[in-house]
Image (cartoon, rainbow, N blue to C red):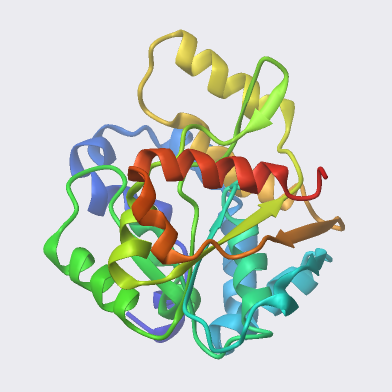
Length: 273
């Protein structure tokens, strides 16, 4: 396999590696539809054009290619010598992570982001990623990588919802946050910085998610459409708001679940004062 091939997204190979029985069953027309849905050709064009860049350079080039811009508020107030865990809402399911890493890199020399291990297939960004398995048991190697990263001096970003925002009763917001980030911050003595993105995906995405839930289907099938949702954002501008740090020492005064809810409320309160 050539280096160029290594830097290309191959949906068929990913399915075969993650679920061999599904790969054998999947009809070719359906596989072709899925490739179009995830914009495999367009993603591979971007990979081919910019994969020679370092991860942050790759992100900036990709955002420029898609004419996506953003404005940041509040990051400059943070002491540059701190060790932080940046926790954010997750309205876009991927593009928000790219913008967050790009912005953090303007102030900090080392940035990491906790991601679904499926994203490790995006080789140009892999050095930024701390993988977790969201569809099965966490393996020992991933767990050790997370511990090592938490103990390092790198700034770490995470999306505690574990999946992107959904629409319920007319309001788009994250599902209930997992509270493991609070434990991670306390154990690694990192202050938590709330981060908020404004924005929504298409009604199709939210309607599909709600229909899937109503039918009792547990598989997160709408995730397949996240690349399409990302490419729908071409030409748009966004805002990133950074809140005041929550000191790690204060996390001792209530259970992790309580603090997770508090910090989620802080995130959604940013910009609404």
